[in-house]
Image 1 (cartoon, rainbow, N blue to C red):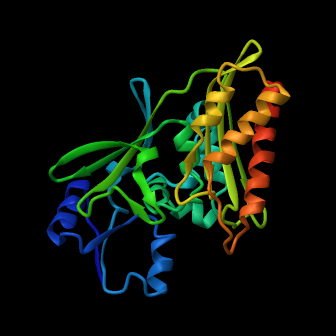
Image 2 (image 1 turned 30 degrees about the vertical axis):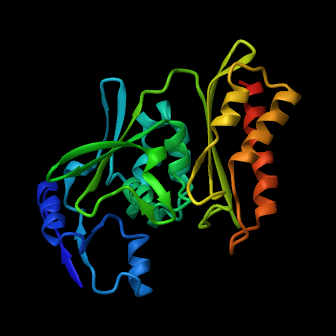
Length: 281
């Protein structure tokens, strides 16, 4: 095994380019080290990003919020700035693993790992985030909804790094919720998760965004359910139609964590709970 520890982003990009697909970025290592111990990554070269300070930090840039790819889950969960504007992302970060895992794991690793059960991806989808990917040949931006192509499969090219996550500054007085169901309260991967975002305008909902985790090969943005709820009051018939649309968007399976039946049943329950919160706003 070869381990490289570049001191700058430029050095990290050069290391990836020179190895032409034979090197993998190493962020917090909470997923990759487990795969290494299982022999999945045997013989690979790793480019540690721990010293690349350019990839850390949470800031504003005009009308966008920017989270560096090496920002840890704990930094996100404890960010007063993000808590005020994007609480759905903070709540999801606080649900990741244990304190030790949150101190090591990063938002970039959570996204690039491309797990359908990734905790931070549903919130980033409802925040309509864009991923900034960089290589020696330049930079490109990819909507997070298009980034993952299946479990462990993404659009990231072998010589590219995810350097930051950007999303538009949310409007004031939004309702943002993250709900996660696992085998236990902590240290559990999601059986199903829901990120919800909306604002109440009089008696109707505006800006409705829904994203489901662990119910398909990738995180699912439930656009048909959003359309049912957009501009509507939260009535029993509207809720029923939104649930039907949400269920049509997902394709859960039976696996080691849960069953397709349980995930479908819980999908309906989580959406009802989220919509109930809007009535209390």
